Image 1: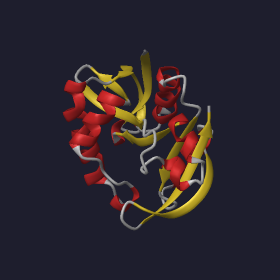
Image 2: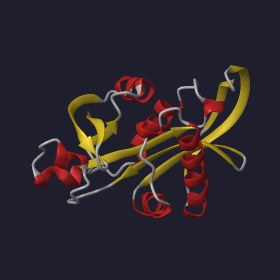
Image 3: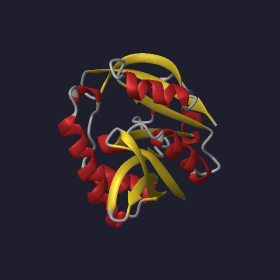
Image 4: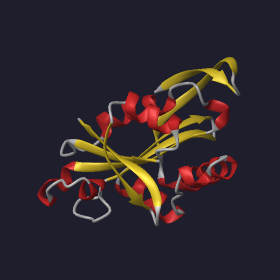
Length: 180
């Protein structure tokens, strides 16, 4: 899907980009963007990074949507189909275990600072929804309560806060859910 960025580096622009599913050979680009954005964050505790192996797994077994300009990746959104895994966010929300296979984790949303302000998180979610398996009826997500940008994006995309708890080795997180 072709998109036009209307803001680049905080200034008005008309920059064409492509929103599409990422491929396995692009996992290193996803990993590199994650690390670049994380390293520049004023509050790195707002985002817990994934390993290259996890990102490769999301691309291979679940879903990763990216926003590209040629070979440059500027944003991505990963999903993880956890099934009965205890890492399924449904497990932390008190959802009966028989329903876990109908949930997917909306795992990571990353947008390079140059491309922020274009609604890319919402657009990636909208593009991903038709690509999810029909069996997925709910999405779970986590957001740092101190991160108003990600929290506001998630709420604007229809997620609701369902719980608050420590996750990822002691980080304070909201658990959010969205019914599809």
